[in-house]
Image (cartoon, rainbow, N blue to C red; front, side):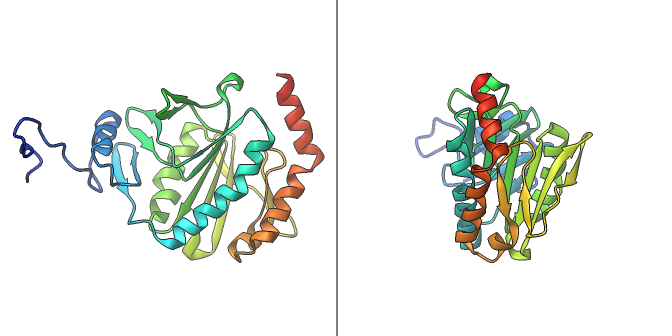
Length: 230
């Protein structure tokens, strides 16, 4: 059946499918995406459609570990929200679907969910797990997040055993340095610590021990207390 044909009832036009490389507005992208409920991940970056391959176990396992690392931080600070694979409408040419997000809530000038469907505003932290999507995540999406003002961007290239964590400094991304043990510590979310070598080695008990140490740090308690007073 062609994109312009009618369905078997003969009354409703069939929506064109999303295709890699299509050039669309965000409204048209979202309309077609909603018409493809079997599609799990697609992004519109600067008006161009990017589509991932079917979700591989390398991606799904790494994604699960990232959510397990982030979730306790979200629970520890009441005004911090977390999102998993949410559709984020940036503007008329950009609607992306990050693997994970941490952001302050709307009362603290954070991003908000519009009508329970789309994320609006700019989240403080975005995490992408890249397998088939590595080129887009490291290229066009990284440039988009930088330009949009995402304060920190974490990109885990699973097949390359590489994790980058950038912080926005004077309008451009600069790498956050790791300490002598390979631990990177967030600036925007004090106490959010990641043992990068342990994550890459799939040593999740060590990842969680480092995370818990961050949650118990003085800087994290001070940050949480300050937000409770606002």
